Image (cartoon, rainbow, N blue to C red; front, side, top):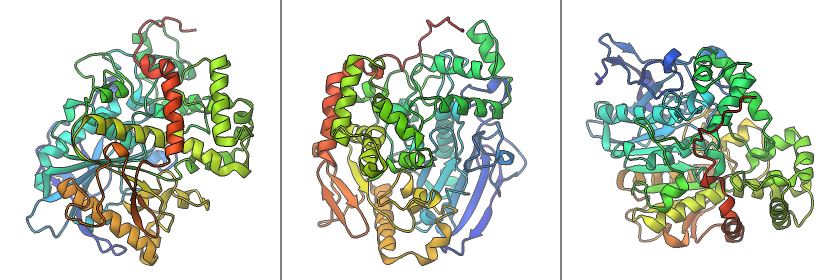
Length: 546
């Protein structure tokens, strides 16, 4: 029995992993966000009296057909899943609430094909996943109360509230909840750390491969994006309210197609894998969750003071290079217009002297002033890794530790073995750990499941070490609470981090210092032009609908 009503799950005995657990899937946590509720914050689900069948997953939110097919999709998609060990014997267990990745445009919290809970279940950890609205349906903003933005984040917040009220009924400890995420899900986790609305809903944070301080995880000029969507859909309107009403009547899958067309026209497409619709700074209002830029909030220390486990994979940029390998014409475009390699939050106009000079600095530092070629694969991977992932993550760690007392357990994952999820899916043989590769060490995915019975000793070592540290962190807030040797220290102001590969675990000071110091200098010099200073705010002075 939950606070919403009775539910029925099922008992699962997983032969591959030996996990024995109760599965409750497809639990509605909000009313269907359709018709007049489209683009709005979620409405809590009304209680029910008959037994809810929670033995199969619910629909996933509308998205491109990457992981899910159209027949699995519906706009009525706000479901969560709870998996709990069957042998917990009346003791309350730690809880992992995990927010899925997907660049804010695809994926789901479903156990197939990515987020199978069995690995964590074997550690006596309760697992909770959820769907949240994606793309324009989750992040469109007209900077009005009727379409204020960040609906996807508000979905996750509502799911967290339901978990907080009910998890003890499933054997979970509401005071030992870790909020985790990877990629875009990791950014949502960090945004929830920046609001008091989520206070007390989680006590630890696990965040992989993303930072809210990286420009791809915040939407600039959201109203312009909404107008672009209306034009792509062929709508005609005279004011914002008319546009909104027409957008509410468009088929959800047509919106998905239109936003994909907009994304493909992004001049940085291929180099910068992102979505045109993502979290945004909102106007003040009763439902607003983020009203100031994240960098500003962090500089003022306005973030929850709770323990964090945070890291990245050493070859994050392999994700983009795999796209270049499929579309080599992108290399020609980047060599012709190298200014496209400048992070989007450095907003010098294209073609300006300042922008050209910065492009030359970047080209000299990463490519010795030569062109991007397939011979210089590693140079390109480093550039993408640094600008799209690592610099923002490292900056988050430093800002947090400069203003808060809670520990940050910082890590770099170098594992390159049988469970590297992204490399398996995309048949990548280049060495190192790509973006999303670490998912295979946390969840039983459809592509790693057949490999589990045959993993090597080194893979098993990485997996067991990571899971041991993670469970200790979830229980105590420290991954090595009793260690005199092999201690994983707080990052502190020196950026101490654990480096994990197939052979050992070792602690070092700030990672890749020369590359990070290069970007420190770039942002120090060009900060006055940063888009964080204004263009990520909602702006209501646009009246040109041409």
